[in-house]
Amino acid sequence: MTIVSDASTPPSAKKDAGRSFIKPISRIRFDISDRDAFDRCIGLVIDWMEERPKLWSNPRSGIPLPPEAKAGQTFDITEEFGANPTRALRIDAADGSLWAARLDFHDPQHPRTWVSEFYVKNTVSRLVEFGTQLTCVIRGECPPLEFTRPNIVRTIIRTLSAEADGRQLNEAADIIGSDDVPTFVDLLQSRDRRLPIIAISDTEAGERIIAPDALARIVTGAAHVVHLTREGAWALTREIGKRFSTFSGAVRLYQPGLTEEAGSPFEHPLWLFKGASDPSLLKTIATRVLPAPFLKTDEEDQFLRFALVRRIAVQNTVLRNAYQPESSLEYQNLMLKDACEELTEERDTLETLALEEQGKRLGAEAEIERLKDEIRRLKAKSDALEHRRNEKPEVVCENDDALIPLGSYEDLEEWARDVLGENIYIHPAALKDCRKNGHPSMLQRIADALIVIRDYWIPAKMKGGEDLWELAHTKLQELGMKDSQCFVDRSEAKRTPGYSVVYEGIAYVTYDHIKYGNGYDNTNQIRIYYFWDDQKSRFVVGKMPSHLRNNLTT
Image 1 (tube, rainbow, N blue to C red):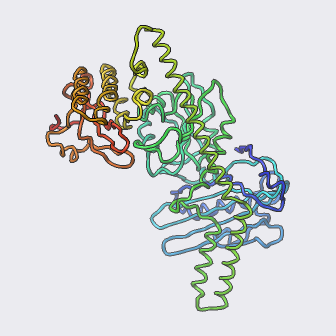
Image 2: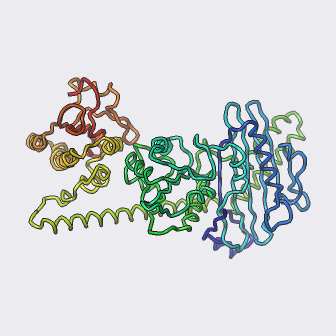
Image 3: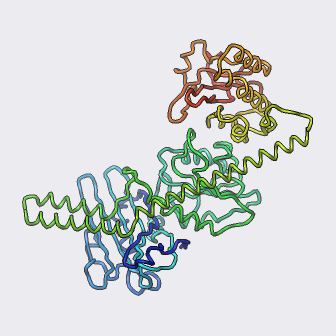
């Protein structure tokens, strides 16, 4: 499926038709696990080069490819009459083989060239790696560009066993029900996840903004696409909280880097269901996802450009011919020429500038989403306050935030943000435990305890003084609660599993807890395990409300 972008020819291209501008379209990389995947993948790419596109009487390569091309060897028809520049290189070594190719397809109707690059990498004891990228070199006024993948991606995924992030790739969305959520969350929060995940949820009536399979046919290979059932969406919310979840017909793009300990919901764009489907969202997501890998600069996640592979091949040839001065000089000149051509291409296309602008746009969009969420939050807070005032006008409260009730454990994260302020932070591990194990009978007591911590415990910690500490302990006692260390021997917490949490990249031990009741039944007990962040003057709730099992706890 082809998606048409709103982007047109850069304005400066109209002023200087002699300049070239590059537009990144898509970059895709994944693994292939089939037997003989290296040779089979090369064969499929060669077949694609010799196909005849629609409305074009000749193959993409312009002329038939030579026999060595079909044998997976090095070839070059760049200088041949009638050919679209097409070439490939193969490097064989003791630990594997590398094949790379490039095809420049000159658009017969417009002043632009579609450049397709490929590589297939076969390393001993590893899966075969396939990569392809599509760019468009624009030399004048052109119609809107198409954000798509080369059709070869679809062919390879349908023909061979492709996978990324340890997950099988296919051109249909994976259905995530409630039983599938634990495995899905593992993928979502995996530190090794490379591709984004696009989650599409259903409304209660079974409606959705876009068709999951339609999106999968556009972006598979560049992103994972999942379809959350209604039950799956609720289970996901219980696991990761409302702010990071996807439900009620919304669509969310989960970027890599989301973990249980860290992440901001504004880094993962959310599109809400507004009462009807919106096929234009397919274009929006494709435009964002397909060219995004061009922004990556991690050397360990490097895409093997054809020019890079060519330099490696030339350098290897120079080394082999080190004792043949004339041959060595010839290859050195070739390498210099190749480097010069690459630098000229980069300069003329202004690729770096285009990518910088794209990065700025993504950052601006994330900020807009954050501000929209803040507006919604403040409006909800204002409505709640107005409702409570109208309900009980005679009540005068020292802190209006106390008027906002905590309705459920699902709302704890948002409630804490609205009511508790910046000096209390509830760790994702505590939020998850509350959603899964918190009992309704203890909900109000937890809310009351956190407000006491906000109004009395934290001022005592920050200002000091016996009177403030005595008042804080008295207020907790009024709730039947006590602030104490977890073990008689304080250092025991450090040696006991479960008493530490990762906070801002560092493991912290919860030596102390605020407790209510005894035993392990959450219907009549609460444990708030915490530590104090001196740098941010913040009370960090590490675990809550379950009682960590240990015979030595007090």
